[in-house]
View 1 (cartoon, rainbow, N blue to C red):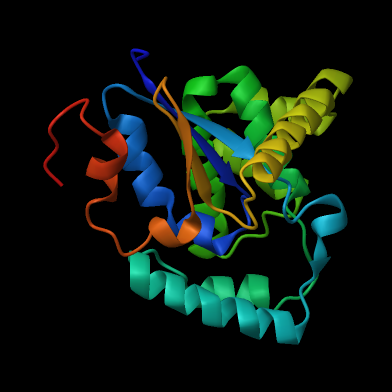
View 2 (cartoon, helix red, strand yellow):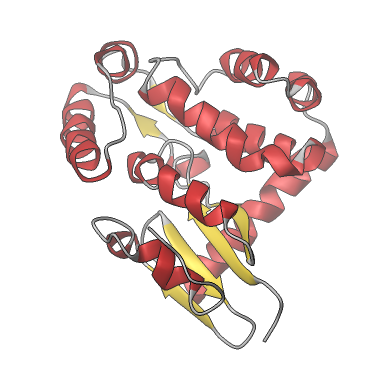
Length: 218
């Protein structure tokens, strides 16, 4: 068995259920013997982007209320008014590219950057589909290098982002994953899928994922 258990986290920055799983990811990333790798799927970018019309906004808010009740994560009226009701596009392209920029410039803060983007959207009601807003979020967190790279994304950054999305989608195909969030657990002997519905409402999930590597109190 390898020294570490590797967890690949399949996600999209604008996925409400992924925001709901954020506390779990924080717990897992803090565990000794656990290594978490972020794998953006591009679910709501490119061809996956869609208009935020009134019908979809109502559907999203209904889902968000359910996510909040299950996870305790906050979905504020600022988000409902300034993001959902504003219209525009549900497009995670800028947020996904930002997470990749952080992965390249400050890899130890990649998960932190994702959390900041999610909080900006769901709590502060900021438009994280806008690149300037994204850059301001990163700068406010001291992630200046990543923010600067987003000003004029070069070929290396764009290629890295495409590669990460392609790898994530390949895993989704391999494990027949239909949605996010999802985890691929590799303990050095085998890989297994943990689907979204297994991540919520299970008080023992951290202990279960950490396996026999250490005794946990959760």
